[in-house]
Image (cartoon, rainbow, N blue to C red; front, side, top):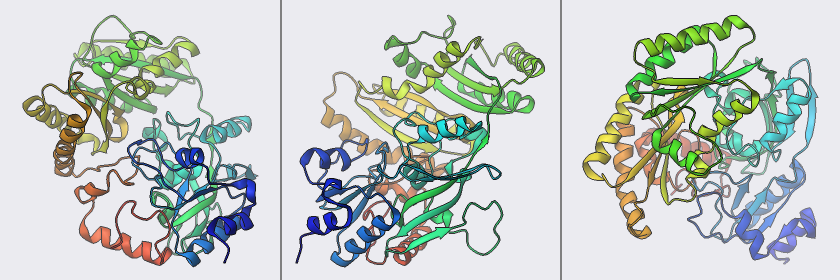
Length: 463
């Protein structure tokens, strides 16, 4: 009987099966960096039909498959460490069709997010889901994790922009759902089961992606606020007058990390414990005047200490860097990251509870907050004290994380807002999902993937 590798070669050709250690290391993990990859091979299909044949082979041989996109995730969802076949979609990156009347671009799942944005722009349209990894993340991975990012307050999550999918299910069937329709009242919307499923139900190979008109004359305003309690009324005042495309926040610790890298300067001289970044369309002078009136009113009420409005495209990009460069600026530190969410109205109390917890029990730890305050998504980064050994820090974090998630559960929030569950958040799933919910999810998994070959062990265990 031919070996597994020989059978994969028979499907896709020798040049699209990699078994060298370098390929296994690169394609066998994501950005978590804490797991040791150990796949049997990395395979690069070029069509939905080839994906189907690989899944059918895996079912026949009872070998697991780990789908691989841009591998930008932070939850271990793309980790292959138990002799799996890594199935990379990077060769499947083409435009399948463009439907101008519907404003739909049908693309293969391996297309880079930034590539989709560029193609939309070339057609005079706009794909609004955006985040720091847009230059390397793939559309299939975005869909599989229901990626969010910096524009959710205006445009929503990836889910809002998917109007159809082609999927190879875990049982090896090709399933085409919804076909790009805006309105379809013929039973269950199956596409939504695969959005956010982290490759555990099927492998997404194509997607109908909705596009939008291009925003007009974007403006960015960065404000310093005296305390976090002031953030909420500032957001309410601006949203009452202006349609915001983004409302981001970061604390002084996070901003200082960016400034220390030397690429951008502080936005103004007045120091502030927290900062917010607002982006909005300004198609006419009236909108800009409204924004400045709200800004002045917020200053009069003591909610804002200082602020700066972008005066050029270059300045707008630099103001955005204060927020978008935070993750990169923290890469030189050992950190414990959490991607969490609560209802927007609960954010101030939640942050206060977290800060009190660290002040009482871990005062030596520095916390760096940033996130998408307009949708309740918070990124909490705990920085290792300089003199603390790394093993000791990670051991303490294993104690700290459940305490953080207890507070998330207190406010009915989510332990993972936009990076999925994968492996790293799996032990904590019960803080956000009930036993009954998980049992229903297991039942759905059993239906689409009866032999449990697709990304096993991610989100939850079947046994």
